[in-house]
Length: 62
Image (tube, rainbow, N blue to C red; front, side):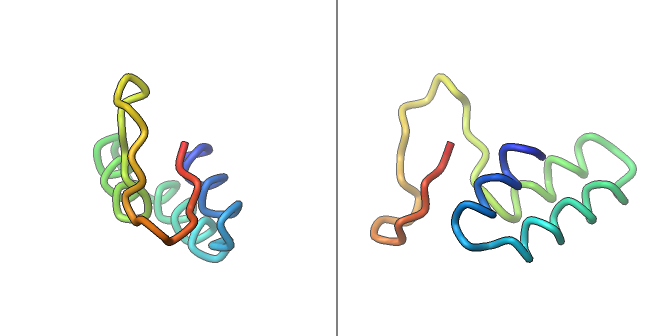
């Protein structure tokens, strides 16, 4: 949640970061929380090579 929230805020999506965190805190399972995060950012493995999911959008993903 922290990395996703930070990524959203750094890219001018502070309202979305707040909304995401509130929804996660109200979810009743780890898997629902992951699903919510996935609605806001692309979840990737640290072992995967970095790919920009939206070329030209200028969003820095971690």
